[in-house]
Image (cartoon, rainbow, N blue to C red; front, side, top):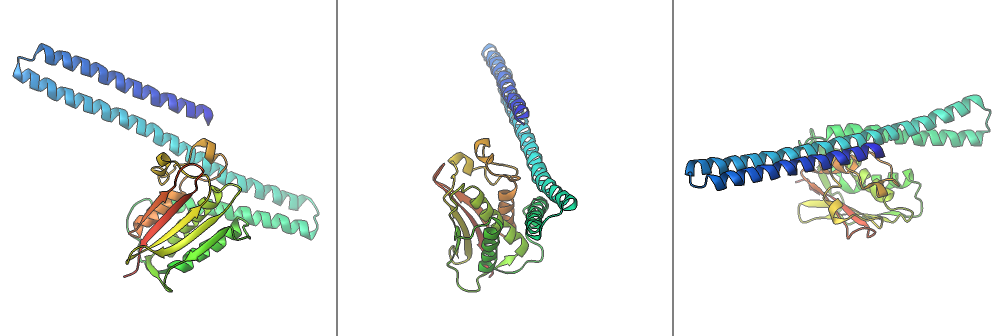
Length: 301
């Protein structure tokens, strides 16, 4: 991956240099043309128009090539991450099954292996579900056949399952419910569960060794509800805040090396928000200052 990353970076630099060189040559030629033919009004007009068109075309072409190279890099990173997320639990399950098949183990040890295989199976299922949901929510169309969804119930379920999944038993993830009883939105319950689960899981994973996550549900004005997930983790720079909801995007290598994932979780959150007529956004004071992710949805009218 390091070698391919270096190749892509060189390709980006080469494209930028080529584009800049072509633009410089075009500027020099057109300026020379205009200086030589400044008395001929028609030729001057043609020269100016040609100059603008040529420069615009070169700039667009350069930007397009750079964007495609970066998209290719993100897709490759996604494939690598998904491959890892699929192969790791499968290899673990296979190893434990072989152990059970080849050795006589006491009941306690057998129970431990079975529990581990169940956890790996759930991790595998989550990865598959993420990929399928990313494809399903890829466009911004509204939800088909929406139903009434109790917001506090969904968020409470996600908080409970996240704590159980990450083996957090000392109140590391807490829920603050400020909603009136029975507050509901109109939407797809499974998609909303997936969106909230992604936010809570991300907060836990990027908290490092000190997990302290607060999930708050509250009214956001008269007609909206906000689900906010606040952590005290690694934080996000202002530059990264603009990118974290992009599909396949992950934080730089220095950070993502500690956290496994596919890079589609937050893009799913944003897609679900849009499909429900809401929005998703992130806030952070900077690196090391924690972060807050908010999913805002319209209330059922």
